[in-house]
Amino acid sequence: MKRKQDTSFRVETATELMPFLLSKLGGMTRTSVKQLLSQRRVTVNAGIQTRHDTPLKAGDKVQVLQGRGNVELRHPKLRIIYEDDALIVVEKKNGLLTVPYNPKSSEMTAYSILKDYVRKQSNRNTVHVVHRLDRETSGLLVFAKSPELQEYMRTYWRQLVTKRTYVALVEGKLAQKEGKITSWLTENPHTAMVSSSPVDNGGQLAITHYKVLQELESGLENQESEISLVELNLETGRTNQIRVHMATIGHPVVGDRKYGHGNESSPIDRLCLHARTLEFIHPMTEKKVRFEASTPKEFARIFTQ
Image (cartoon, rainbow, N blue to C red; front, side, top):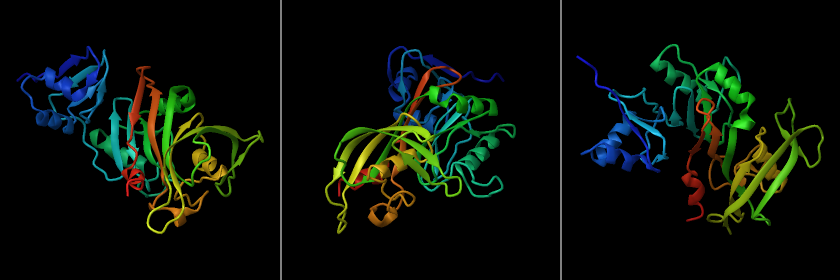
């Protein structure tokens, strides 16, 4: 019996995935389309998509697979945002390491979760970390599916990445609501602490642009400290860059035990730093791709109580 062929469509005008599929798959309901998405049977430009509101632009190729897609990853600490033959983009929750500190460690990490996930598809599959987030930082991470691609992306990371945006809750109210922080950072190999110098002392140049989004005049209940929700765009990506820069200007990230006051002033039991937007040139298609991981609800919640 001949296997049914996958169905392919070419996008002619910009739209979102749900209305596009409804217009192309005659007679299907929104519920039926959502089932296709949940079964990982829809790809956009060869990457599996599960979100009904995925934006489409003219020239994109949408494909509906006849068989169920790749094994679905179900994990409370890690969510796949995008996947194709070359890359996996995930949203990591706070508390999860990107990779183990010790190669012999059995601790669960984003890397170990994804390694198990790709091997369920084939024992020959591998996954390789391209960049990292601190354990307590949540947000977007990219993994490569081959060591060659990992090396290429690490080597040309600064040229490939066109935008990296974080959001953070920081202590206090900033006098300047928008600005640029420039310093030279040096990591102490013994303490793993990063120090900042306003002048070139041989460290790594680090540049962070910030913008205040919201301010809380007085914290929750009896807490008197003021808190600001800040958007941060990285011009460089150094170890602990945002945490050090915000502490340097007197507004450490809320919940930062390393460079700030820890949970003494935190209405949320975590480091309040989140990698929200990542935009880069896809190394295989050479097209710009953009991914979003929504601001954690607990960040916004403190401004509405």
